[in-house]
Structures are given as structure tokens and as C-alpha cells.
Image (cartoon, rainbow, N blue to C red; front, side, top):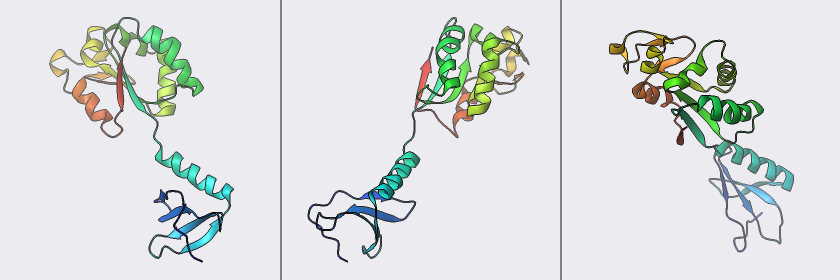
Length: 185
């Protein structure tokens, strides 16, 4: 069986299969897997199989936008997080992958045990693998962490149930799964 060049669609790379998909000419309609070394068709595929393979490959290769949120402004954790972002994360409708949340100033109170928003955030973070981090100095000033101010920014301040630190610790914690965008609220 020969593959006609002429009017064929571009090949789709399928590294998982180590072969290429090629739509052949109208004289021999169908999709054929081509051996990457010999370029000889191995077997014809039905359209449904081709769509399934392509959809799986696109799903594997497409990456959702990854974001990290910095809750800095007054009431950001109460309003934007509690009434907008968190319900979407709980319902699976947020539209992006959240890899981290960093809380500053009074937004740190949302992460206290017993806080309604904090309990929901902790549950979602555990289920979805979201890093929760609290500003170490902000937490110390609000009696939400243990340590002293000389330890701030060094990763030596501890808080219950959440990572305490500052930007050096945030960069390190997100280095294995870095965000595409950082959003400050």
C-alpha cells in the first residue's frame, strides 16, 4: 500500500505511539498509522478511532493555565475568594488550575481553624493539591504563627496547617509546579 502525497492534511505528532497520523488522498479515504522509520502504513483507522486518539493526545498535551493568587488587599479573602473563586473551585468551574494561594495582612485570618472560608479553602486545597501559604510576618503580628521576626523570610516561622514564609519560600514551594500567571487581589 502506498501513501499518496498530493492533497493530504498535515501530520499530527503522536509521541506516545511513536508514529505519525496522516490523512491520505481521497482515492483511499481513511486515516493510517505510519511507521516513523519506514513511512509504510501499518493499518487503516476508522474515523472514530482517529478522533479518540487525537482527543487523547490533545488532552495529554493541552495544559490548563496555572495561576497563583496573592490575597493582599483588604477583604480579598472574604469577598473575592469566599464568594467568587472558592465556589467555582468547589464546583469545578473555575476554568484554570490553581497551584497556590498566598495570604497577606488581615487576609491571613481566613486561614484560622474554625473560620468558615478557611475550612472550605483547606478542604479544596487538599483535594486539588493547592499550596496554601501565609506571610510569616503577617501571621506573627496576628498571633497566627510561632517564631520571631528575625526568622521571617527564612522559612523558620511555623503556622498550623499552612506553610508560613515569604517570597523566597513561595518561589521554592512553587518551583515544581510554577504558575503561568500570578494574580494579586
